[in-house]
Amino acid sequence: MQAQEIVLENERARVAVVPEMGGGIARLDVRGADGRFRSLLRPWNGRTSDGPFALASNVLVPFSNRISGGGFAFDGQFHGIEPNLADQEFPIHGDGFTREWFVSEQTGSTLTLHCLGGDIGPFRYQARQTLVLSQTGLEVSLGVTSKSAAALPFGVGFHPWFPRSPQTKIRFSADRVWLENEKHLPIAPIDIETKGYWDFSDLTALPNGWINNAFTGWNCICDVEQGAEAVSFRLTASDNLGVALVFSPGCDADFFCFEPVSHPVDAHNLPGFPGLKILAPDETLRVAMTLDWSS
Image (tube, rainbow, N blue to C red; front, side):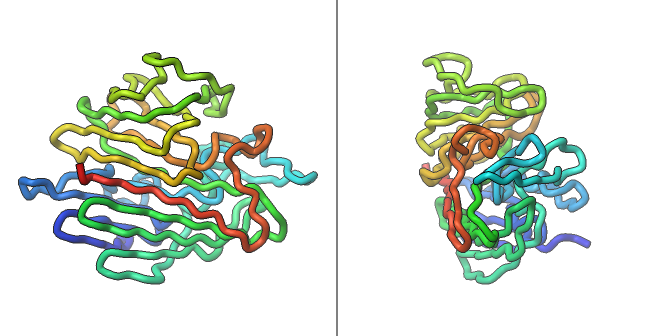
């Protein structure tokens, strides 16, 4: 059975959401001056069998990326978490992206969805996602409320998939980048040298080879230039999404990811739980991302 898409649209843009697939976005298209719609996000192929990472964007809750070691220790207790995907050694991206979300409100420009029964490892939560589409941008806001019995370190983020072509260039400023090992776990952060390999402060093409690294100290703004066949835009994030993860397998891939998230990879096992928010029962963490094509 084909998954249902909920569509918001106006004269300039249209966005489709698939509630049963993690409340993920299926496509975001923008009409150009020539009347043609072009993709801002890599469009979903429509096959539910390909899983949620075939969507155009995923919601990451109650954590982003991997947690190693079978779980994490917090407040004197070890909290186990089993791997949640068959092809992954570690649990990854929480469980919000695999759960069904439910539409609670829809207008011509706004869609609000809820995830009511989040449950992975020690985390119990509810989440609320609101999309607001205008003529010049899409704002996505996300809130997660802890329903766990005790305080726990929560994390969140957004995982958009963008078209990649030889014309694609990105620009953002950051202070440090985390190197990764063969299991995609963090080794150590290094300072970014001006005009060095990791410096994207000017419009820069993505590396020809693999990149899957978390950048910290970024200013929560990323500009993406796409050439004529896709939509150029500015991504902005709330200041509590202090880590930008850049992922692309290489120049032959037709996509790249720029993920504004709250914490580095495996932050639950890093000293001080960097970027994670300790939520007591019924406390809420709120974040937001905007994609602006007005320029």
